[in-house]
Image 1 (cartoon, protein in one colour):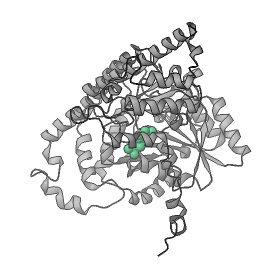
Image 2 (cartoon, rainbow, N blue to C red):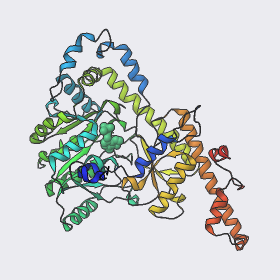
Image 3 (cartoon, rainbow, N blue to C red):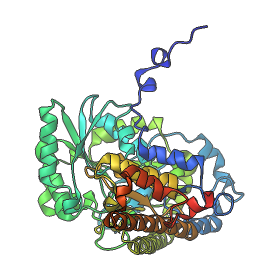
Length: 483
Ligand SMILES: Cc1ncc(COP(=O)(O)O)c(C=O)c1O
């Protein structure tokens, strides 16, 4: 029997690679899955530092669950709600869920703004929210501008099934990756020259991967830009409650409330939110679209039947987020724990001379500057270093190229998805790796100086030598363990 190639029998979507998963971002996850670190069962395995999860405050949620058994329909106390919940299927969502989420979104933004529960539309995480928004705002072939570096999942979420394009707005380290009007204008102009219709701008505030927030002036300038161009603004604010030190987070909603913003067409503004990061619940798939545009609310609500949040989850979340005392305590404590972890991690890196983007004060990751460790200042050099970090140091960090960063040598490292002990192991591996590199450079210099390089050490052979188990240089604990 002759089998035809899948590309003949499947759709273009199924047989193509528009899913965006052919990227070192996802390859790193696979490397982790093949050899996951475990403190006793696999101490030399890969440590997952490529996953932006917030696991630092689970104990607070567990305590709340213990004290509120009625919130769960699978407990004797909550069982009486079972039948209603099992049957509920209105894609508007439960009113108590929408009310609680609207209140929570305001609380996370310092109660300086309010949200209308009737504008809250559910989706399967922010992932589903982005796709739904893209479906509502653009046709295949049309585009969104996205400042770089940006979350790699956008390449899948916004583009894959919608046929929408993403156009990078290049930002760089010369001004700490600020989103400037010039960069926006330039990307917009380039798209027009290429004959691509720009339908919107997608910003992530706080930023993944930078861990920075957008300041008031930048937000104002962005709002004026999209208004003048008459394009949409999609604001991903899913890290709003992770801002762990000053300055405070400013939501786009706050900017729209400013006196001189009356001229702005609110129909152009949409917020994407989720509980995946702020509460640490990516498994619950609670995504939210909050649009100021009635037609978008209406269409997104109809589309939400493709990705509803289960009624059981809505029921639990409604109950949890309506508990003001818990919410207040959780937000405060979660920020304090993130701040502490961030400080411990940055201090640990500083000890071996590694710097991170200094303007960051949010998120579950830091933007690590490893430009000094590149053998060659190019994206090939970045990939070489990334492979070394995955294979030798056994850390899954994510290279800047997977975030469309315009400069090689930056890496995102997540710090809130592990316990203190694992973080210490990760830090000690980084220290050993950097020290080894420093020693290698010293030795190289010394040998050159002594003229020993005449012994026809090509750079390649030299590198093999310093990486070999017979090298006199300190080896990382892992390399030692293997030899
Ligand atoms: C900026 C950004 N948007 C969206 C998502 C997807 O989130 P969710 O798990 O809610 O789908 C992520 C996940 O890492 C993210 O970082």
